[in-house]
Length: 460
Image 1 (cartoon, rainbow, N blue to C red):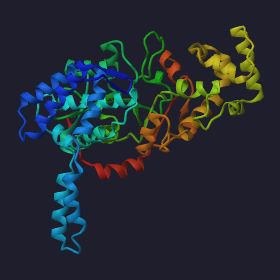
Image 2 (image 1 turned 120 degrees about the horizontal axis):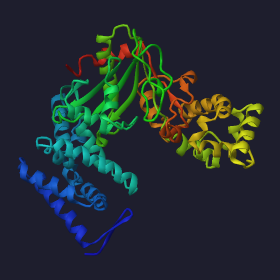
Image 3 (image 1 turned 45 degrees about the vertical axis):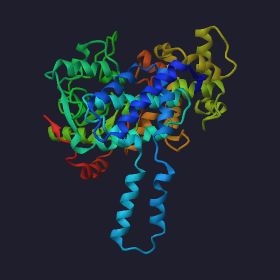
Image 4 (image 1 turned 30 degrees about the vertical axis):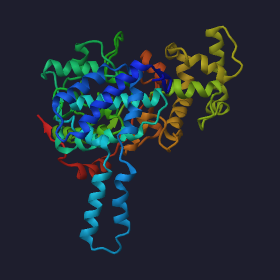
């Protein structure tokens, strides 16, 4: 048996034997109508022990070996297409027969894991590995991904999900889980988590009934008077001397400032959308005076994957070109910025773009009053252009957070792009301190609520 190259990894004989052993277990699971939990458990354990560099080969081989074969459906297709003008019942029966035979064998296999203790969590992790392998090994594993996603779309529906509010009185394990899985605005202590569960701070988590101890999505909400334009109005980062906003006596706005998907295997399935609607309903019951629902969102990738590249001249993938940058700045602003850059750095920049590259590469620029004055307007307009105009190959917003909220029906305006709204080191390096409010209009929320009313019960 020769070594096999998959993606960037080369598999030796021992690796191939391990993968073949897993494939043999899958074959046994497939052919047995009622696969014993022991076999499912053995597959789960051996898969988890499989080195990560060998998993892409396993995924590729599963797609090749566990698929509906042409000869299995040719007869059914011929009967269906050559049947002529049949009466409706006969046509429906043949369609049903064809659907049964074209169902992916992979779906039949994975469906059997749902009744296994920990089976749902295993499949979530499995899909996360598939998505990772697609990105890192440049493989097309879409048939396998779509099969697992198809099952999740069935399992993560209506009666399987429930929404629960997390408060300071919630079990310690729930609060600790949220602290450990907060990725948007990470926390350093449980005390900080407690600050986010106060009277004017709410937290909701969405659970699956097969995983009642581990939420799949959670959202943090601030109740405020008016729209918060800075994360420092809501939370206080470690080391800051300023306080977040105090309790709103009569809040009229709900700010969704952190939405976290705790299961990478659920990426792209729209559970965040479901959760937003359910949280809105819950908040309306307790705070009927709230009329505005919006986010205070980060802009991941704005600096490293977009603006830095444009300033460096690596602008081919984007609508915004390097030479257009200076058009956002007045002549007075250009002179002030380049003069200050020369004064601070001791170097003369050849043009404005070079100066901006040096300035924005160092998070300390947000402590300089000259930069704060002259960058506010142009940086806000560049950010708005990025969020509203830069698209991916499918015509969707290039920024993933913008794609999520605008795809859910939220709106974006220039006035809701916020300058120096996150002055933390992460905020500066991720998005030059910029944040944005995506606004969910009341009429649109009412329309959606009519179609989704009572789909997911709120567990009190």
